[in-house]
Image (tube, rainbow, N blue to C red; front, side, top):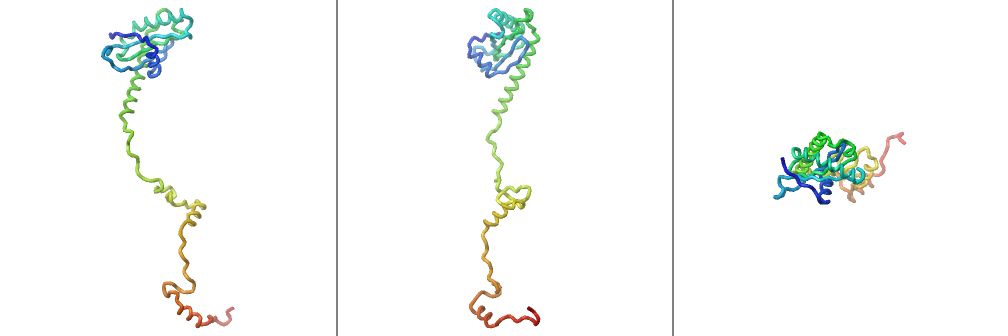
Length: 208
């Protein structure tokens, strides 16, 4: 049976509220948060009690906190874990029930709270152990072919405007001279004279 201390500072209540997890019951809300280990209270757990004005006037709020303290002294030493701060927030039902609150509700709430704390601890451990500097896949989007077979640098076949702009951007070859095959005879002054001496081309009779 571990000993426990009471939370007294407002900053301690806020830390449990902002950084911890919670489990909701009919008569109270149980909050819990893991704290860093220290040499003076390494085997202890701490608990705090609070009741807002929603519960009622000062008499009803004090009654709710007394019932929560009695419930904690009875059940929490066997349920609490060391190095965890617990906060019990009274609800209206805490003053409307009988003198003793249901201990089963506290056991269920503590079990649910511990599961949430374990999941949060496991998630934080896996996040810190993961490698965030993994190398990215090599390759440029401009060299990846799409479903039509054309790369990003070439226009698609069904894109008429893209095909026209692509063709207009390509360099045009110089047209070959008409009348003389450039591969058989280069254009010279002698070739031009031969064509002039040969005269007009004769056609067959009857041809127009």
